[in-house]
Length: 163
Image 1 (cartoon, rainbow, N blue to C red):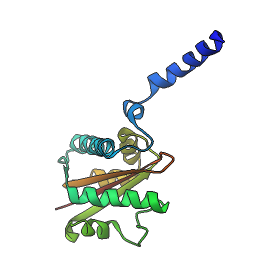
Image 2 (image 1 turned 180 degrees about the vertical axis):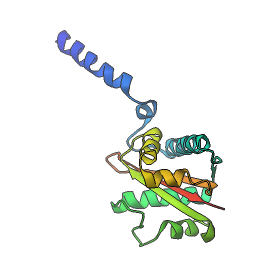
Image 3 (image 1 turned 180 degrees about the horizontal axis):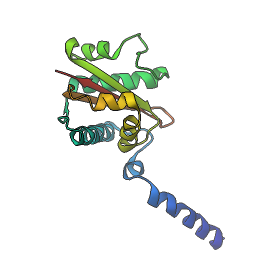
C-alpha cells in the first residue's frame, strides 16, 4: 500500500510542477473577480505584444467589456462558437448595444478551450487574422469577456475599438 501511495505522489509531481501559474488557480467555474483578473491579464499580454511591435497600449473600455462578456456568455448559454451572435448580431451590433459608437467598432477575436490568459493570447498571436486584430495600431480600446461552460471550458471574446 505504501508503495502505491509513493508511486501516485511521484506521478503527480511533474504535473504540478509543469502546470502554468494561472492553470493552478483556474477554477472550472470562476467567480466574477477571478474572471476579471483573467480578462485584465489578457489585456496586459495583448498590450505587451502591441508595444513590442510599436503600437500604443490599448485602454480598457467598459462598454467593450460589456459587449465581450455578453458575447462569451451567449456562446456558452446557447452552445455555439461564432462571431455571429445567437440573435444574428455582429460584433459591431453588440458593441453599439453596449453603448460604443458604431464608427468606433474595430474588430473582434474569439476563442474557446484555452484555460489561461497566456494560452489564449498565444493562440491568437499564432493565427494571422487574430494577430492582425491585436497588432492593428488604429485600435485604441479593448474589452475582454470570459465565460465558462458547466464542464469548465473557457470561452473568450476580445472586442476592439477606435474611439
